[in-house]
Length: 434
Image 1 (cartoon, rainbow, N blue to C red):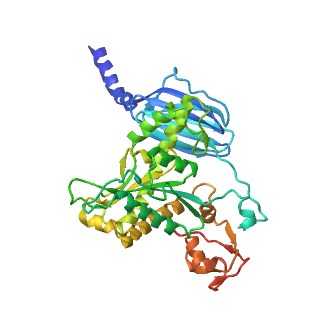
Image 2 (cartoon, rainbow, N blue to C red):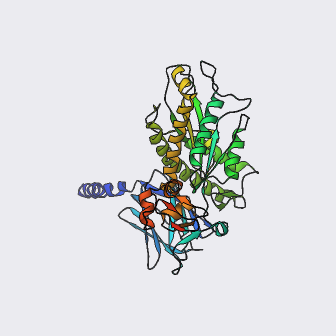
Image 3 (cartoon, one colour):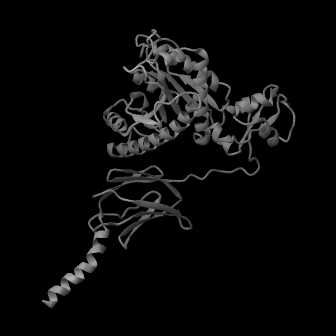
């Protein structure tokens, strides 16, 4: 009787400790990729994780809370930048230490019970001490890597597809084309931004055709413009949509199944890889792009809210086809309800169309300057590395507008109080305040 009591007493003491480790690592897979490795871990339940990097020597540490593993799972991997992986399981915390040959950064996605990590070497940029500033002249421009950020505007419907029609017969296709033209005109003065449209007149373009334009242009952002409709004519307000996870999942299946997919996805080679690697790359790309789209949507929403009523209180998500580029931040903007007589009248008004175009411009510029595309003119400007050589006499006002800065900051950066710059002058472009 005493032994039995002692047995249950001891079990009672230790059972809470056993229960703490409620998550089990079920499998681990490592896929070598260029300059790094993709790791995929599956668990029996949702897991909490933390990670950090260490240097001298270079290491990457990945911790899983309240998680245990067993000896059957192989966590020994080496190759590329990874020398080896060390594993510890102390106080129900599973720690993986990646010993590296070079410093690396990680992009991690946790979806359901699967964690996917892309660990990639950080490329060291060469710094020229003698010429820290970069000059852009007409002769030099094409020899340099940085380019203007590309914005693709997609006016919905067109041609045989009129879209929604208002009570007074106003067609959505005409309204959104005019707003898109205003937006293009508002973006044109920026020297750091290029603009294209999926259609420039009243003709029909397929949904996939619109995506093809964005890919051909190597768009950094994509904005589809529409006007909503509802049977209840009192419905009003603008809406902003990003892609939903359901839409991402269906598009991922299409990409993986199609033989006509593009060979490059987000700068990574896609076509020549195995299906497993393509699936991992696609998951990573889409998850990051959806988050980027939501951040982009917040800037557009905040800008629209200043000039019009909003139908909802946040950026929404839906599986619209035109939002399904896996590596391009994309939004669909419903500018208002054309089925509402008041909003139909406003949407058909040139001043209001221009107001909406200006609001969309402000949101786009803010996002691009807060999240500069890699190796873009905006990235160089925000890093303080951008200088331009003027081809003609230019006013400070127009130059300030072209680079999204104030006249005062332009004067300070160039130690001048002049109102104009002369032809041939090399001008330092200051960072834009965003």
